[in-house]
View 1 (tube, rainbow, N blue to C red):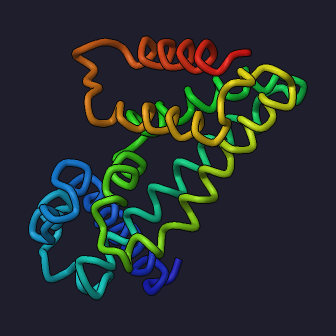
View 2 (cartoon, helix red, strand yellow):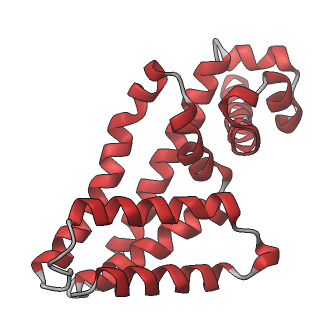
Length: 201
């Protein structure tokens, strides 16, 4: 490997570490409370070095949120792709619930930071992430539509409203769950039961 390639690899690793650190700080302090000095401390770099990779604090936050939204969609989609193709839609929905919670609560800070931070962002920044949000919600809309098509959705429920209630409840776990309060498996089991029984025909 050439010296230039080594430098590029090291630079890419440092940039990734800065983005990871930004997600960590965002998750704990929110958009308004995220300072570059705190990000630099977590990333173990000098604060001015961040400007080598990002022109501003908001550009760094944009990147961290984008990574989080993409990670949530990718990991849920991968879990669904690994399921047997003939699995009933209600079981596929339960798989999505598990994958979403595992991504949100244990995979990394990125997904939780993105989900918690997007509502706090200035309007121009929120607009840049709306398509990624729509794409992710689209995965869930398709699942709920399949449940409905298979006759397993309560006919008295508005599918779109039910979906947003489910996602809201799942996302709220990032605000209260603590491993000291109980296992992640117990949270997932409770969420799957509530979704199955709450949506069932």
